[in-house]
Amino acid sequence: MSPETSDIRKGLNGVVADVTAISKVNPETNSLLYRGYPVPQLAATQPIEAVAHLLWTGELPSPEQLTEATAHERSHRALAPEVKATIDALPVTCHPMDTVRTAVSLLGALDPAAEDSSPEVELEKAKRLFAQLPAVIAYEQRRRTAGGPTEPIPPREDLDYSQNFLWMTVGEEAAPAVVDAFRISMVLYAEHSFNASTFTARVITSTLSDLHSAVTGAIGALKGSLHGGANEAVMHTFDELGIRPEESEAEAKDRARAWMEDALAQKKKVMGFGHRVYKNGDSRVPTMKQAMDSLIEHYGRPEILGLYNGLELAMEEAKGIKPNLDYPAGPTYHLMGFDTELFTPLFIAARVTGWTAHVMEQRAANALIRPLAAYDGPDERPVPGA
Ligand SMILES: CC(=O)SCCNC(=O)CCNC(=O)[C@H](O)C(C)(C)COP(=O)(O)OP(=O)(O)OC[C@H]1O[C@@H](n2cnc3c(N)ncnc32)[C@H](O)[C@@H]1OP(=O)(O)O
Ligand SMILES: O=C([O-])CC(=O)C(=O)O
Image 1 (cartoon, rainbow, N blue to C red):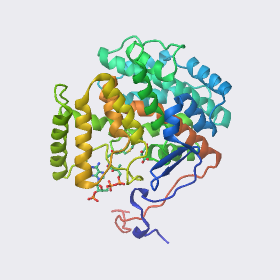
Image 2: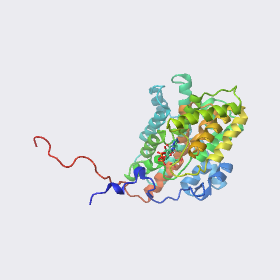
Image 3: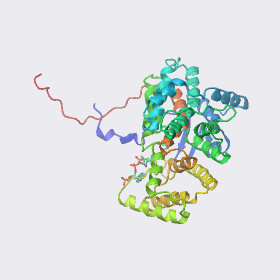
Image 4: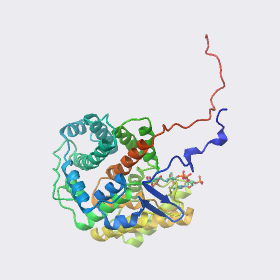
């Protein structure tokens, strides 16, 4: 019997596709657990290196395991010359998501264990990729700033992941408030169950393809503005509104409210709001908003808060739709000085932990992911002349 159109769940909305032990998204309680741990508690206390270990292995690292994990991460940070040369061959105007996608694909091709997907080798590949991505992203930011090929800033082994990421991007040690906001964003972005990019990684893995192919595909899925690309799109909204540092918080808020009312009257979709699973607010937003607030205070930029609050309020009043994680993350990365086009690559740096945990989980209990389609093309007909 052929499948009926009435069987279709467009966008797989509401479809339970498999089990996972990696994270639990609970829209009823607005909560998120990584391997059973509440994510706000992880964000308050853990470095991303420990959260990565948790996602991959199921447990937080012991002090000895954390020392080993951080030493491993620090020893794989450098930008490989082949990767730098390939990035330099790309136009400086290309989207940084394309640059990172290309770099991950190349890292896969260079990996001597590319075709070995045994559990130990796959975990090692995941760890290496997590360690390698910051140099790629930091270098892309520097290349854009320089307007072409430049010298990367070498990593520093005395700095942790977040400190070193910011160091390689700007060549200065970031203030503790900035490092902490960055660390929190990494923890919050690390994992979110069967979102579109993770599902993409699982589909690719399900064909018995390799980890780098799965991550390369996941990056493609993350790029779109209905998914990770929304953090970039949020900043475009702020830019369209115009950021005016001379403006008071109240003035900015009023202007943002009016902008949003107008946008919604024109039936526009405003990125950074809404979510497929959470309908009463994204569990991660309060933690990310707090981190954004601390940066607004650090940099003395109350007008950004005015814009943020004005847009949020008008969306709530008009449609009752709440912000998702990309909404506070966008202005946070802007305040840190990243180019807007680098925001979604930062999401990659964090989510590579979740993606690779899912690659390993999928492989351990694999079934080819291959749904059915209800056909609605022409009825069978003869080829002319056949
Ligand atoms: C980290 C992440 O990836 S979080 C998601 C990031 N993506 C975004 O911020 C993009 C903007 N948001 C959206 O497009 C959606 O809310 C999605 C794609 C995230 C979720 O979509 P779905 O669950 O498929 O809901 P859907 O898009 O059908 O929206 C339901 C209704 O709310 C409206 N709506 C949802 N989000 C928005 C929005 N951001 N702006 C305006 N209206 C919206 C839709 O227009 C639709 O209205 P209708 O019923 O009158 O047609
Ligand atoms: O879960 C989703 O659909 C999108 C999301 O919030 C994420 O990937 O972090």
